[in-house]
Length: 471
Image 1 (cartoon, helix red, strand yellow):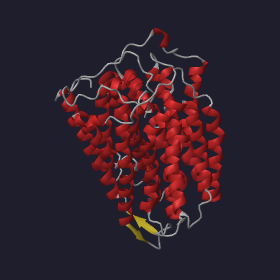
Image 2: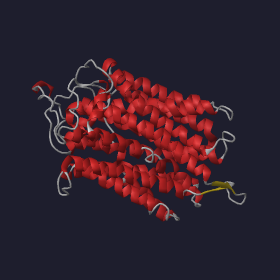
Image 3: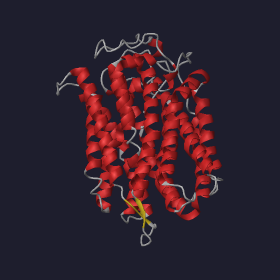
Image 4: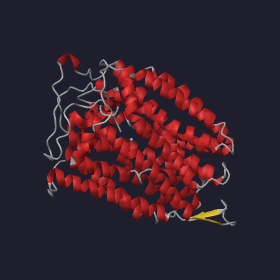
């Protein structure tokens, strides 16, 4: 799923995915910092501003108890906070199938999940600024308390209290999750330089493992206890795991004052405009295979618990592949890997997903898609830093996050509306209705292809039509 940090990045740039992860890992929390030197339009397709060399005394320790404590803390924090974002697909299917909030269409449930992502992305720059000013640990601690509390409050949302669900399991969960994983990850690059790519790859496996474990746990709890107690149990688990973990989130370097949240002059650079448009279009589609995978599996006769496992596998496969892609980016370049993953993801949605009518084929699609098209969020920060360099990654990432928030909110609503339009009553069906997911699949795959094609144009702006070049 991404990265960040504050403005404590004065190291001289290195080549490859390690430097990309370095810059990406230092981008989100420093979204509040805007450099005085603005992007110089499209004057050069490849020039980048280089930061000053790091003082020797600021060299990362490359390990030690405190450093590995930060890595371990992030792993557990992302296990819960990122994993719970994935879990919304299980709740969406359960709420709609059981008419938990009477008469609520699937598009509203989809909008709630999209709101969680959108609110988190939109709040990212502000959360980063707060962490810079007040410290990482306190922001993660408060966010963890609010995340657990959002589930506890939602557990009291009765059948006629849909707005409470939307506010707390939607917006509040999204913002507090972002405050947990984003800020915690930002601390890691301060402790590692030489091994940073490997360490970041390992740390980011927590979210995928959380998706696998929590989707299955949530389905089990819903089947046995229903939503209220499932939400309460989840809230307590969040507090028990994440509040202690927040104690180990430390920073090695002192805070630095921040400026404005965004560099609006970046829109003068055609490279940024292309990247921004690609992100907007991609996030109109990116959440949909996550949100609807479980529902689709059940619609073709797969047991609900197995459907939850399939969804979990889709997330789990992202863990090892992130490490592999980190190494591959170092060899052939982040943009090349990014393009390949998203084109393959789009083709899979247009071809394999509509023909996945058995357990084996659905599992195959979920895992192959997770390994390719499901990598967008974790790869885009690396692409940003490889194109714009260390110097402007902070402000660029802040605005790209806003582009994702727009797509996440509107795109999930559009996907839900498509599914509502192709849902028909069927008294003979176990669920009481039939759903045609093919329009959603075509919508998703097409937008993946369009987004990747815009990135292809960006690649052309960078290096022309040369194929065998690292970019």
